[in-house]
Image 1: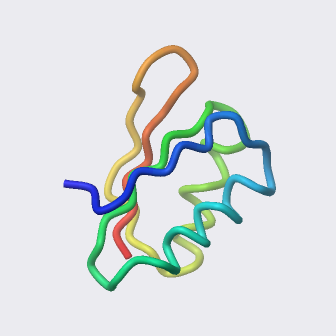
Image 2 (image 1 turned 90 degrees about the horizontal axis):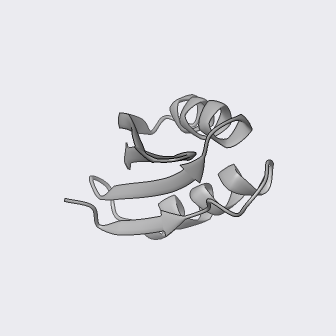
Length: 74
C-alpha cells in the first residue's frame, strides 16, 4: 500500500521528475510513492530517472485513458 500518492498528470517535463523527487525526499526509507502521470515524456522519464537515482520502481501500469501509475519504493 502506498505511503503517499502524487498526481502529476497535469505537469510537463522536467517538472514531473522534480516534483516526484521532492516527494520521495520527504519519505522514509522503504516507503512507497504512487505517481499518477500522463503517457508520453513523463511516462518515459519518471521511471527511468527514479531508477537512475537509485529508487526501486515496483510497477508501471495503465490506469485509464492517458493516465498511468508508477509505484516507486524509496
